[in-house]
Amino acid sequence: MHSESNITDENIVWHHHAVDKDLRAKLKKQKPVVLWFTGLSGAGKSTIAGELEKHLAHHGYHTYLLDGDNVRHGLCRDLGFSEQDRRENIRRIGELAKLMADAGLIVLTAFISPHRAERQLVRDLLPEGEFLEVFVNTSLEVCEQRDPKGLYKKARAGEIPDFTGIDSEYEAPHSPEIDLPAGEKSIQELAEQCLSELHRREIIQL
Image 1 (cartoon, rainbow, N blue to C red):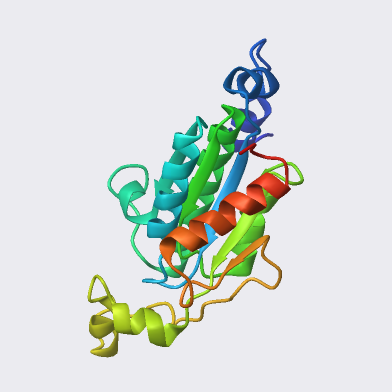
Image 2 (image 1 turned 180 degrees about the horizontal axis):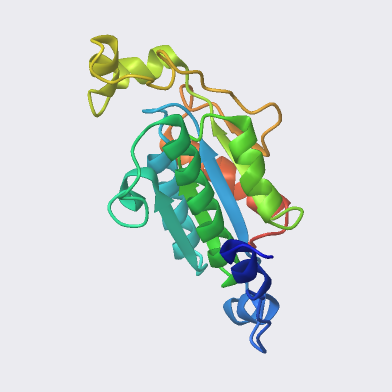
C-alpha cells in the first residue's frame, strides 16, 4: 500500500509547454545563466551584483537580482537561521533561480551560502555552464572592519550564535568560475571583471 506522499509524488508530472526555455531566451536575445555570488557577510556581494546588474541593463539584457535579505521578507520569511533553515533557504533560492533561468533571464543571487555542498546542490539543478559561482573574495578582517549592519560586533558579543566566519565555518569555493579580489579593487572594476568573463564565455555581447 502506498503512503499518501508516494501517491502524490506519482501523480505529479512535469508539463512541457510549447513556449519553452529556448524560445524565451531567443525572444530576449540572450543566454540564461545563474550568477551565484558567495562570500562572507559584508564582503560586498549585493553591492557588486547590483552594479553588474546596472551594466547588464544598460546593455539591454533582462536580469533579476535575488538578495539574501529581500527573500526573507517573503519567500523565506518562515525560516530562521538554524543550519537546517539556512539549507532550506538556499534550496528554495536554487529552485527559484532555476525557474528564472527557465524564463530566459540572467539571474544574479547574493547569498553567503557558506557550505560547498549547498552551492553544489544548486549547481546540479542547472545544465552545464549555466551556473557560475562568483566568489567575492574578501577577508574576514576586511569584512569585520566594514561591518555595515553591525552583525560582527553582535556576534563577537555573543548576541548572534553560529555567525558565519566567527563561530560557524565559511567554506570558500575551490575553483569558482569568477574570483573577485574584493578587498583590492573598486566595485566598478569588479563589475567590469564579471562583464569581461560573461563576454569571454559568450553569454553576453558588449
